Structure formats: structure tokens, C-alpha cells
Length: 433
Ligand code: IMP
Image 1 (spheres, rainbow, N blue to C red):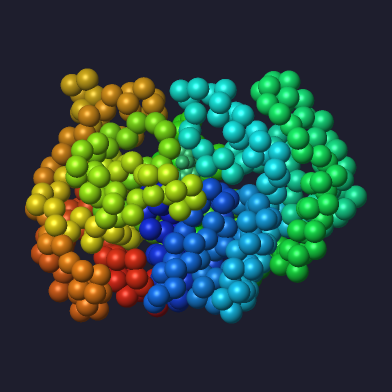
Image 2: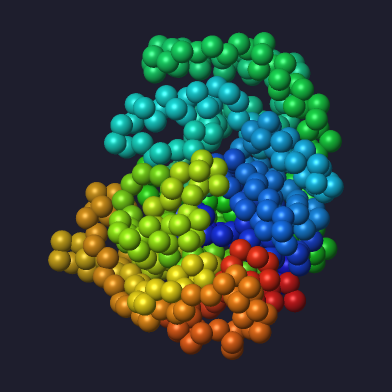
């Protein structure tokens, strides 16, 4: 096996950062393929905690890390992450696609203004300018990394974009517009100077790495339910995050993908607006949120939490073609007497097992649960000690919980995670063997 795609199987925040970091230790190259700094990854190694928004997780493991054309880059954020790593003595071996699009302050202004106009249809975005940047990309107003390196082109494109954005923000959205073109030009040419040494043709490099039978990991951002096409529109993000995006977002053919791993958290969490059928608004929800530290890495917002929803997971298996699952945060459910798994929805008396496209139908879906026994609570050290002993040492209730997930989703479990630490991992399939 040479190339593996990692995708979020739910609403993002499934613990992908840790899983990618884990697999990255065995890969040669890690490539981010979609999203931007709306994503947040926390990587814990020993006593060090790293929080990234753009940098592929493999950077900590000292791997070659690439940012593909499907990603939208806020240069200030990326430079901040590069400097943070450098200050810790780690020099990222980074390559950035010439074709990736650049987020400008104008996009952030539009993001906030657009959300206000949308009223009840707002997604509760991270306000990082992600949607407007992808909109400009699709409308062919966008500025790409390659444009950033050419002052003449950057100037021309900024002129064009400014006319549009100034009118839009002041006349359509009725919002103040206090940025000048000159300010942005100055700032972005400085960013370009610092970033130019990283700019590369990611498609050429990714393909040649795969052709040499090296191990390539495609790092997804967000989760299936946030996908622009397959997620809960319009409450998701503005890019494709599902496995197909690993190809379009890097310039690698689907023929070259060997495995697609879906990261699934042992329960549900969601940041932002829109219905979540299994949401827990009670004490149990509060307990899981606190114990699981379910607060956004990017915005710090408390995440909404609920029981595991297998309608979502089954959907993720289908639209991504998942070949295996990585089940995370099982330790967080420790101490609960009974745990619920949603296996279908009841919509006005009718049983639904497929993800509805209509958000109004989804809003009225009531979860149909099966109840399984919980497992005991343990300290971080106990979980790590258990993980080191391997699968057989796990409490029988965890084994049957993960086996049930596998059975319902008809997808094998490749990895079980019982804590943030890299050692709190049980690997059941050697992907880069
Ligand atoms: P945007 O991507 O900032 O435009 O936000 C659109 C929706 O996606 C909002 O509901 C966000 O909360 C959600 N979202 C975006 N990125 C992430 C992520 O990495 N994890 C979880 N939710 C996210």
C-alpha cells in the first residue's frame, strides 16, 4: 500500500489530527487537500501540544508536508505556524501548491457580512473568510499563490477584486470598508517574499512520490457532513472535504489511492448551526463536552455533543468509499453506565436509514437507538498502559462497541484511540506495511 486518504466521518473534530500524526510517522509525505484555517488540529507528543490550522500534521513528525491546490491559504496564519515550529526547533519541510488560492482580509469582511444577511440559514462560520475565498475561486476572481509571486499580476488582480468587494460590502451589505488596496498589496508582497521558497508544483511532486512507491498520506480537514455537496447544505463548509477531494485538491488520480480511512469519534460533536438529531442537551451531554474538551480549536466555541449516529457514519462510508475506520475518544465515554447508538431515524412515523438531503426533513428526524453497556472510567496513564497491551486487553464492552460499529457500517476497524497521546492507540492494520 502506498497512498492513504484520511477523512472525517462525521462533523469534523473527530480527532483527525492525532490519527494523521500517528500514520504520518510511517509515511514519507503528508498532503492537505482541502479547507483552510477553519480547520484545527491538535497534536500531542509527550508534554508538547501543537495546535495547527493550516500546517499538515506530519510537520511535527519531520515529514515532507504539502499543501495542495484545494486548500485556501491565509498567508499570515501559515507564516505564524511556520514561525511557531521554528521557535520550537522544528523546521517544517513544507511545499505549497502554486495553484492554491489566497485568503485576503476582504474575504473575512465578506464572511461576517454574508452571515448576517443569511439569518436563520447562516452556517455559523469560523469567520476566517473561507466561503468568500472559495466563491471567488469559483467565480474566477481568485488570487492564487502563483499570483502572489508576481507583483504586476497581484496588483492587477487586487484592482479588479477591490472594485467588486468595495461595492459589495458598502452598497449591498451596508458594512464599513476601511481597508486600502495599498495596505493589502504591501502586506501580501511581504508574505510572498517569506513564502516563495516553499512554493512548488504539488501534483508533480505527489505523483512522483507515489510512482516511487513511497508512502503518501492525504490529510482531510473537516468532516463528511460539512462537505459542500454531500454535507448538510447550507450548514457545512465551502469546499469538498470527502475523499474525492483528495484527488482534485492535489492533482492525483483516484487510480492511485489505495486506502480511505474514516475517522469516527465514539460520539457526535458539531460546531455551528443546523439540526443534529442525536444532540444531548442534558447532564450527560455536558459531562461528555467537559471531559472530551469539546471546544473548537479554531474559535473556542463549545461544541454541541450527542450519541454516535450510525446513519451519519454509514453515509460517510458510502460517499467516501471508506475502506477502514479509526474510532477515537472511546476513553471519554468511560464511566457511563449505558451508551446509545443511533441506528436509524424516525421521520413522522417512517423509518429512515439514509441521510436526507432536505434539511427540514433532517430537523424532524428522531433518533432510533439501541443501548449498549458502558465501560469503566480510567486515568490517562491507565488507558495508555492498556493500549500498550493491545486489543485483547481492552474492556469487553469497548470491544463489542467497536465491533458493533464495524458490523452496522460493514467496514473494518483499522485503529482504536483511547486518549490524545500517541501511545494511547491500538493499531489493527498496518497501512504502510
Ligand atoms: P466555514 O468553513 O468557516 O465557512 O464554516 C462553515 C461551517 O463549517 C460552520 O458550521 C463551521 O462551524 C463548520 N466548520 C468549519 N471547519 C470546521 C472544522 O474544522 N471542524 C468543525 N466544524 C467546522
